[in-house]
Amino acid sequence: MSYRNRVTLRDAMKEIVEEPLLPLVPKRFDYIGDIAVISIPPELGAYREAIVSKILSMRGNTRAVLNKVSKLEGERRVAHFEVLAGESAETLHRENGYTYRMDVRKVFFNPRLYWERARVASKVLSGESVLIPFAGVGPFVLPPAGKGTMVCAIEINPDACACLKENIRLNKLEKQVTVIQGDAEFILSHSGSLEAEGFRVPENGFDRAIVPTPYGMDHFLGKVSELIKKGGHIHFYTFKTEPQIPELIEEYRRMGLEVEFFRRTGNVAPGVSRWVFDLVKK
Image (cartoon, rainbow, N blue to C red; front, side, top):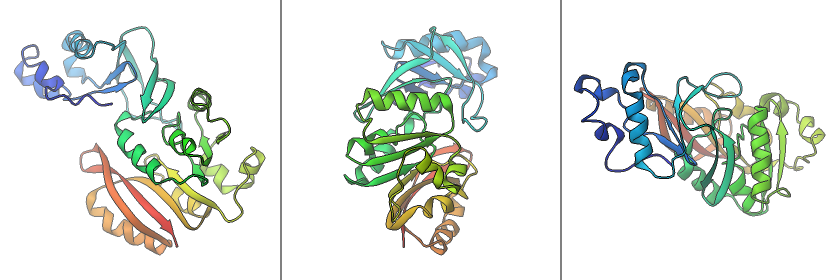
């Protein structure tokens, strides 16, 4: 999870980094398993070793430190990282009672969403059929599967897909999850693709969809809603400014989707946040 001690990394670097540059030191960083992930601005190049040393001292079992040097890129949603300490970016991450194996450089994983993933999993009922596009390494997949649902998980990144299959095996959920590697937009536009991959689409539609949508893919909601039964639930993630929310709620209502709940789940850029909407198909 994120480093949230009372003493931030910036506070810890006060006696090391000169005052004019101190505001550039990130206040926090993330832990994924035993790997610390941070974004160090180029202006702090002279202090990189000192920052890494401080991070390693903050938690005794930290095995590696990665510096995120780009935003998510390409259809695989993978950023570029420098290994500043350690020899490998492979790790085991534990969250909400499940174990995830991954190479942080090859897949997308946001540890800050652990509470949100637990919240959504708490809504899932045993026996449901659940559709999860953009499944990644499985943080939205495993908790519902562990509650006795039948999950159809779709992921385009072959590295993430391989991790997802391994994580399903590690957590002994092979009977609950069907994994499909491919473009979710294409697959859901050709529902026969699901049948071809061995997943039988429920006759009246899926009971629920969990959709951690990538940036700029709001149109995907229409494709998902077509596959959800009446009265079914959709947990949809989107990136918006707060003033856009009222109009978005009205748009969802025009689509035949009732907004049960919504909230901000993190800031991604100045003024832009990730929002989740819990929707019911009318």
